[in-house]
Image 1 (tube, protein in one colour):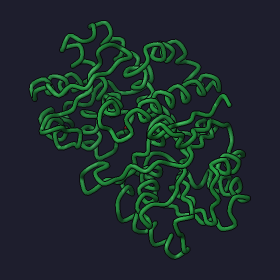
Image 2: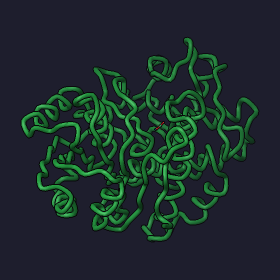
Image 3: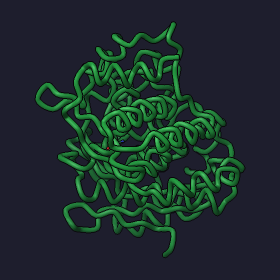
Image 4: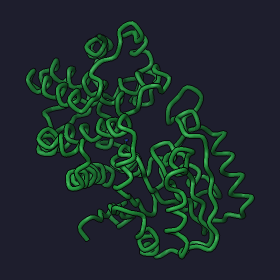
Length: 364
Ligand code: GLY
């Protein structure tokens, strides 16, 4: 069918990404996995649960006679081992075993944390992703990266654990707060930049339709981004090589996110980080000045930041935080640059002085 993407692992079919406009076919696609589940726990946060948990529960009624739920306080501050422990406890109390299923209903925090609990509870049980934010649809629900933040370190503890299914109800995007939609667009723009110039051009041409939630434009955005991300994670599921290109904009972006104490959205930080990375790509003679200006303009046109306040963020602090991130290889930062719009390269040659130049470009 047209709106189903099959993701392979080790060359074999692993899970489907299904794009729908309601939750009605969730049970059908879960049954298509060929597995039967006695118990299901829907994991969600306080924001998403109030909108959708009843619909998802109803949609799953015929699949399992025993559906429980675990709802935690929305926000990045909940993405930690304490909340995972609470989830383990509720699963133990409900007698969950290896034949049961977790359903991650929500954005990136819900998906990452539920996936991590699924990877570790009883040494691994099944889970599916039902992403409700644009960011989770186009990025975090795909590829099996799961995990939590540990002390001050983002995503420092985790596991690769593939979902059995990724089911998206695109109509939920209409009720997504504007800022969160824009944040998702930060990752979408990144996909165009690292992998597909014509997709990047489509994002320029059809911006008004995309921002007005035109159903065809939104379907194209989510689908093309899922194809791009899906192709990368199929080729390199454990980030031994090309998967690192998905971190374009994230090296400096993560540092800004952390220094903002998560007051900035992830996609906003990726946007600012992308400007710095595009600037460094220009300085290294890889892309033209006009390409850099275009990238900056597109990011800004989507209502995303191209700089942060120089009074609040300091270049040396951003550099230090960048270097404490896990994107390091033998003491060198694995930095992602653009060879051209639509093609990323991994670079391990950037010096601190280079990085500071990129950082200073985004401090205004
Ligand atoms: N979000 C980057 C990755 O999944 O590898």
